[in-house]
Amino acid sequence: MIQHFYHASIKSDLLTSKILVLQGPKNSGKKTLIAKIASEIDLQPTLYDFSDKKLRKKIEGSNEDELVAFFKDDQAILIGEGQYLGNLQIILALALSGKLSQTLIITSSHQLIVEEVLWEALVLNNLVYTILPYSFYELAKNLSLVESEKLLEERLIFGSFPALVNSKEQASILLAELLENAINYTFSVNDRVNKSFNLRRLLEVLALHVGEPLSYLELGEKCGLDNETVERYINLLVKSYLIIRVPSFHTDQRYELKKMHVFYFMDLGLRNAIIQNFNGLSIRNDANNLWKNWLVAERIKSNNLNGKTSNIYFWRSHTRQMIDILEIENDKIFAYKTELSKGRKKIPSIFKKYYPESHFFTLNRSNYWSFLTKR
Image (tube, rainbow, N blue to C red; front, side, top):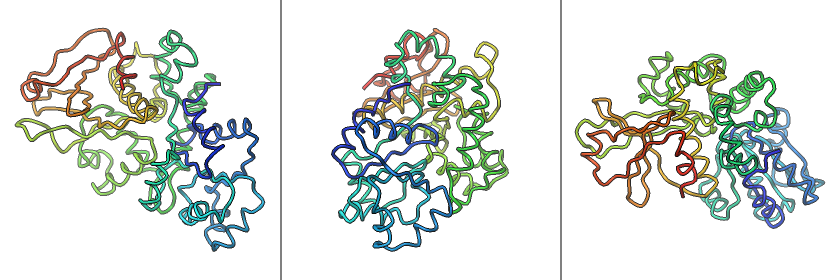
């Protein structure tokens, strides 16, 4: 079993704090992590899974006194799929005021909708954790860097969800189940998502065009959806940690692409499950796009683990010159081209002209580790 990076921090928080929020994609191991830590500190949380409509209806119809009475016999409260619960704000307020004296743990597969002031207070007090599929750093720490490097192709094809890392048998079947869970049990009725066709079609288009600049108009044309619906679905997929949306970088220079995005998947296993392609890299025509996607996702995971916030962009000219990954840190521009093989690429001439002070690198199989651990 892989030791999660946040294990020690969450364990410490559960010993000292009354509220804890774990958010991240479905099946990323949030409840498993809580269960493991709870057993170590002799905490016995009662799980309430609010994807259950009957339970949700019962709780949402309760006033404050009834809620306190409902939870009174629990040593600790574990609210699963908290994004479904319409009165989560009230339960949080009860815990903050002390009317609910138990430890309150909330897991969510979608960014929670609570008052901004309350959310900022939780974040500032380090009570919110984002649990993503295992990062390369976590795997390297548990398995060794050499072993993780040997398994790199496996990560590009089957991803890094705990179920896949801990059990490689029947990987394609497991990923199909994870994909169905992500589509069918992440979004509520209020999200107005057509899960049977429209959402699947959008995911297919995104999967087939990983790493390519796209506008909402283009996506709509390929999916048969209007711009507003496409943007709404994309927002939901981003807030559910399934999709990464990377905006274009520009300073209104001539020839710069502006109103477009590049889309990646937080986990490549799900992406490959959508298009049902689990072939090895040597016989794929999308290997370089997989590499680019993996680097972006791993950089986001690394920043998450290190508590770092930096904006990731792409850059492209109308003449199709492109920077795959661009980060802005302390007014410095770090630009990267990606190449799965050990070759090197040149900085695009137009980009060099517009941003001569930028720092340019090629990310390939021989040097990616320094990029993923860069702080």
